[in-house]
Length: 204
Picture 1: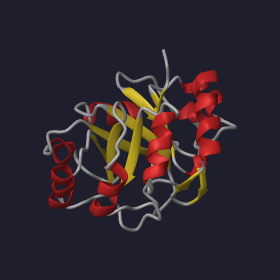
Picture 2 (picture 1 turned 90 degrees about the horizontal axis):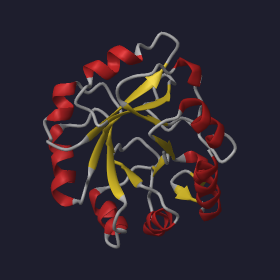
Picture 3 (picture 1 turned 45 degrees about the horizontal axis):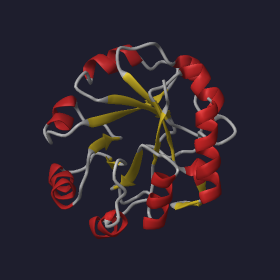
Picture 4 (picture 1 turned 90 degrees about the vertical axis):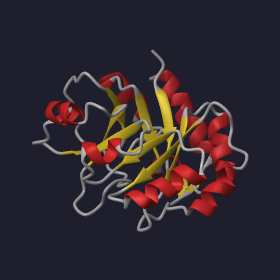
């Protein structure tokens, strides 16, 4: 089965267009102000003004006020919500949109219990744990910690052109999520790295 690809932390329209051109299934927009890849609703509108058809738009939040999430949903063509904080299942469900719930993996993480708790999630996104940083660490975690669960898994955390094929072979995720691994600098994507990454996913 083909592994799907989400390219997250998009901050420029040309990066969204190139990602779609290369076959990315989704682009991610970060609505978390402390992030170096954060965008405003106005900036997101600009990025999505030529939004490529058939590429899903994912909006990422970290412990956001519900009003802020609703403002994004009302202003933008958001397909999926992604929650990277301590949001409860009830919080995630209130927006009546498909959602992804991120889990930062550690040695004692109970992935099975987590996936059962967030049974309403479309998928569980597995990222690396780093104290005080809710995501986008650029660090790889120990993939052997991943249990088989009755839920689609999106693998994130330090994926690059050098390791994504082996990650896919080992984990067999529904999708992979990349941000820093295809960047020239934080928030600025590299066409060359995106193209190479997509090729390696196809090889995985």
